[in-house]
Structure formats: C-alpha cells, structure tokens
Length: 131
Image (cartoon, rainbow, N blue to C red; front, side):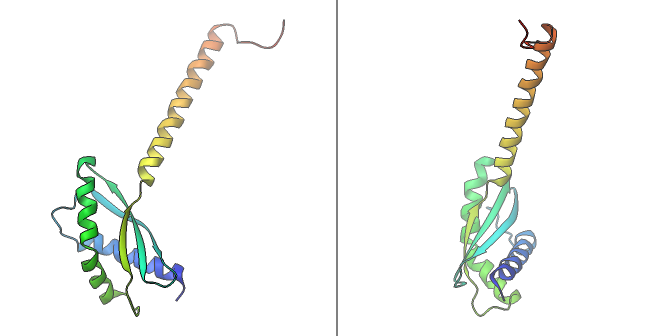
C-alpha cells in the first residue's frame, strides 16, 4: 500500500471518528480533518485539523484532541489493516482563517480601487497623459 493511499484511508477513518466517536466534553466548535501526512516509516502521522468556533476555547479543544490520540489509535486499529498504527500528532490548520483573511484583503483592495476610479471619473476622467 503506498503512502498516499494510507494517508487517504487514515483521513477517511479519522473524519468518521471525529464526527461520531469523540465525545469529550472539552471538544468545542466544528472540527474537520483536512489532511493526514504519514512519515515514510509509518511510525508517525501529522493530522491537520481545522477549527471553527469560539476562539477562546480553541486551545482547550486542541489539548483535548491531543489527549485523545491514544483512543483514536485504538479505534483505527479496529478499522485499518496495517501492521502498526502510527502515533498521531494533531496540528491546527489555519487554512480557513488564512483564506478568510486573504478574501478580506482582496475585498478591501477592490473597494479602494472602486473609490479611486469613482474619484477619477468625477474629476473629468483622470489623467490621460495629454498636455
């Protein structure tokens, strides 16, 4: 089994575990497994998770997730046919936050461009280079 297929299967199974089997009261907000990257020797896997919810609870949520990794590994052992299940490291992926920030920057730049174009149009079309 190649590493991409392993990553894909782990992502699929971890997504199901997150959705249906983690009932820790310290988990808040909406959690989504975005990517799994397994080391070449299959001993470790980095699990990239997005978080959408109250930012003041994010730290507690990710600490709880990290403390649940042993339980997640046990559940994976029952579902995935691998000789050994990798140790899991939960990493917060800020992809959604970064995408929102970039979108906000683009919107701001577009608004500024519209204001500048409107000012130029109101002032007689702006500078056409003729003297």
